[in-house]
Length: 86
Picture 1 (cartoon, rainbow, N blue to C red):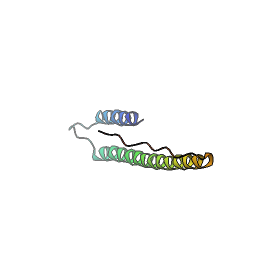
Picture 2 (cartoon, rainbow, N blue to C red):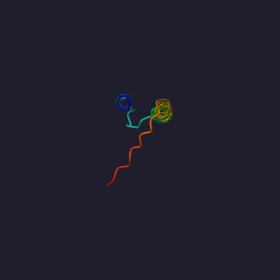
Picture 3 (cartoon, rainbow, N blue to C red):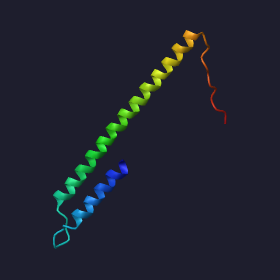
């Protein structure tokens, strides 16, 4: 998804470069609009990643709760996985 968004932005950039004026200078408004669009997409992606991270933390917590309650109901000892040794 990210690759597609970046590719689309680059394709638009190439198309905009084809419309440069005779002196070869791009208009600053075109560059500014492109940068604002890219920045907006980055903020959107950052928000999505933050939400995803929070969801993973929440689900991990819920899984631990379920494991603990299931073990208590069945009268089982909790499983402890020892840390890896190097």
